Image (cartoon, rainbow, N blue to C red; front, top):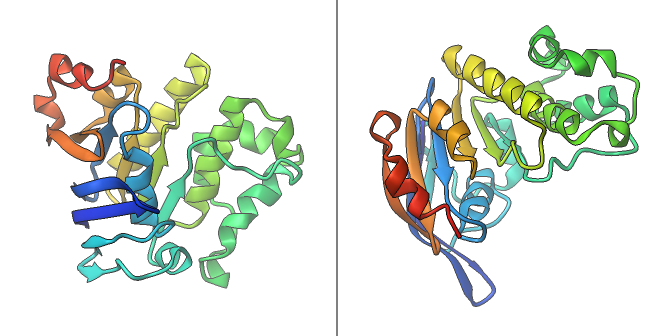
Length: 231
């Protein structure tokens, strides 16, 4: 469903991505791994339309979307859970979830029960302000907000960062469940090797703005991958 084809991306004169190619299929998790600063988040921003590319193209469901702005991509079923969560701290949990209504049709503007089944704590805290939640609870809220849009492509940027182990397990189970529904493709950026290994159907590893390893999750070599994860 998603084909990222030989994209280059710049921040001013600095080149962040060099001929990066990445694919993601419905019913599968594609894990993108690498150290800090190697271009993982830039790749996700390019997919979501948050930063323009200088070369190559991004194809979604057979359509070249390289020139579409972020809001138009959201309407086409692309949702991103950003690094650092970026929830609205002064809005309630319910209001944060409702911000996901923007790209969807009016008839779909309700909170699906599925979100509360995946993350029961959100139902218990609907009227609490987002800023009062723990880091792990905020991460669940950020994922729930993305799911409100009924995405067909879900992009997650380091969802385990700064999260307690019990909630990491909850997030892993949620991603597995979403994958198994067979209705969306999932791209997961992750540095926590064990988490990525357990979820990856396919994987790619980045270094210095380029893809240096890729393949099936079944063939993922811990020794090779860890060479590009350790500082």
